[in-house]
Amino acid sequence: MATALITGGTSGIGAAFARALAERGDDLVLVARNADRLSETATELKERYAIGVETIIADLAVRDDVLRIAERLTSVEQPIDMLINNAGFGVRAKLTDPDTTPHEHAIDVMIRAVLMLSGAAGRTMRQRGSGTIINVSSTAGFVAMGNYSAIKAWVTAYTESLANELHGTGVNVTALCPGWVRTEFHERARINVGSIPDLLWLDADQLVTDCLQDAAAGKVISIPSKRYKVMIGIVERLPHRTLRAISRKLRSGRH
Ligand SMILES: NC(=O)c1ccc[n+]([C@@H]2O[C@H](COP(=O)([O-])OP(=O)(O)OC[C@H]3O[C@@H](n4cnc5c(N)ncnc54)[C@H](OP(=O)(O)O)[C@@H]3O)[C@@H](O)[C@H]2O)c1
Figure (cartoon, rainbow, N blue to C red):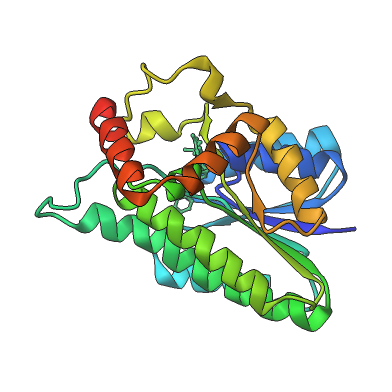
């Protein structure tokens, strides 16, 4: 019986991972801030799939909370077979805003926590000779649209480096790079999605199924859907000057 730890497992993509893994019989450890929602999600999953669900109330922006989760990840008695670093949010603040706290908060949750938790899981899984780490990045990491892009570019590059460090150890490491997915993400970040065409929206359950297949196959980068694979293939071949101009246009249409 396998156990997966999912940060942000109560909503959107994280909840889709929780359902997919529960459906195949894995036990879960769910991490989020909202205690009521965590307990509701756990009860629902336990009743529906007859699995074990542990919850950890934690704010990934708080270093001590992250250390608590890292400790859980390194448990020998109750091993974690899969870590999904999924918790995250959009960042609207401008890079030149005088108040940098929204950026620092985003870096704490989407960089520092990913670094600490992946490192802890990687160490333990390497000793065991097996395990899977999935870091939820974004196609935003391939463009230049503010701190969110910069953070997700870090997540992807970091994941590739971790995959190299753990190569041949039996631990699979994958960066999931989704495009637009209908979740609470955009509302929470007050991002205007009115101009996003239907074609660009992805289904959370489908992308999770594809990502779990990619991770099991040892793929380091998982880009969900053919259309996004084609788009990112083109983006990666564009001159950076062109890419910056496109990013500028896209970002100005978003505010
Ligand atoms: N939706 C998209 O279009 C899209 C596209 C590409 C990538 N992504 C990435 O996908 C991941 C999941 O996003 P989503 O779209 O599923 O968003 P979502 O529906 O808003 O879910 C976010 C989850 O993260 C948790 N969370 C947020 N801040 C946290 C913190 N400080 N500590 C602990 N948990 C925290 C939330 O629970 P609590 O509020 O209870 O803490 C919630 O469970 C993110 O990394 C995001 O960047 C999303």
